[in-house]
Image 1 (tube, rainbow, N blue to C red):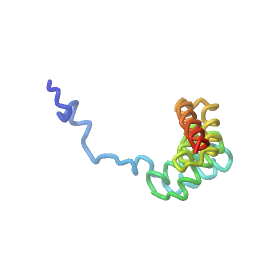
Image 2 (spheres, helix red, strand yellow):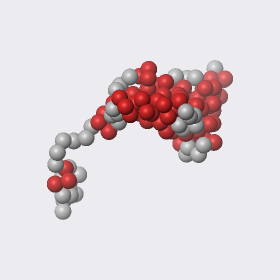
Image 3 (cartoon, rainbow, N blue to C red):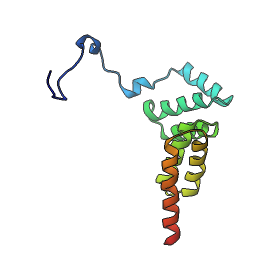
Amino acid sequence: MSDDPFEFKGDPSQYEGEPISTATTFSLTSAEIESLKTEAKKGDNNAAFRLYEFYEFSDYNLEKSKLWELKSAELGNTAAQYNVAVSFFDSSQFEQALFWCEKAKLGGNEKAKNLREKIKLKQSQNKIR
């Protein structure tokens, strides 16, 4: 066996057919979208997150993507809370970033602890200026 990372490994029969794209992975039918909207409006954070994924990775609608990501975060989805915190951090809105980061951290999101430290550092650097 070669150490070449580009050498094909495994059974070639498992790779037959068309490759699956990210867009295909996150695609939804109209009925599924409506069902998820209904569930999200009832408080299902996972349904809201699934809609965020659809609009982010399949339909490519930034406005709807952000809307459902925030809705999912508001409903308690810690992955969405972390994502929202990162978005606020990236746009230098550190108070909002910290708010969502704390929620994600309280919900058990492991990455939120590191982000919290970055936010605190940026806040302290901004106070010095």
